[in-house]
Length: 281
Image 1 (cartoon, rainbow, N blue to C red):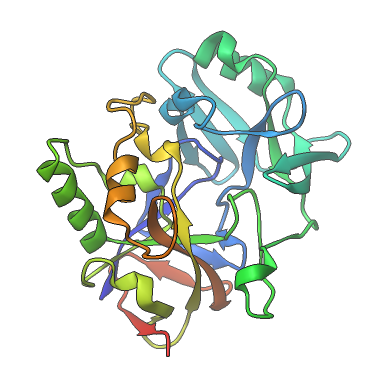
Image 2 (image 1 turned 30 degrees about the vertical axis):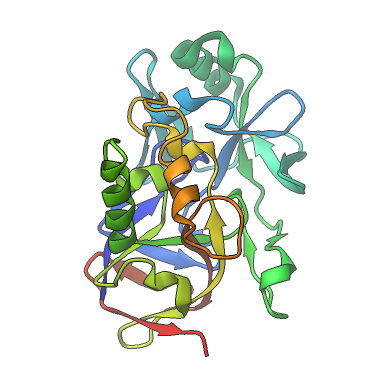
């Protein structure tokens, strides 16, 4: 088996960046979910509320995060931390320390998306703050993440996407691309749903190792076209995943596995790297 795809999402719920190589940190791929949008109550805003966020393209230079949109052009967000007071922002039930980016970025978003974006602010995760992963699935171990929904890595497989698309087509629906599921690591060479039995993924040579902690329960974001920012078919592929019951005994739709990094902080992984996946005892 090998890594077929590596994708980084610097800003929560904006477009991802497909990478040929990425540096590992305990909190995810370097720069992953380092920024997010918050409303006037300092609560996170995603494609759940604004599907059109998916139309915003993201790039990284040596000095800045660059956001682009057909209507508003591009704007740079320097890596250098902005001035201002630390604020508390909310991701689900977690309160995180963050710094607000300059007001011009909010103005740019308003120009890009219109009135639906009024009052939103781009914030970055505050250096030195630790947001712990929920303890329920950590078996006494400790991990942390940034603005991801709950875990620093999301792993999917090409075979499981193939099985889902086969079911979609059998139901008269169009297949969907992997981008709908916003994974960080996509593994090729496994059989469909094999990842549900994995305990660890290890890079060939032992340079890095992840533990798979929890199946990823999916929400309506997977119904959003990740290029156009619209929902082409209401409820799909969410409804088909529910019918497939990929996690027997669990309610809802599941696709992919949430993971934490056990070994390899600072290492660089690449598309094509060979991996070994070990099942639970």
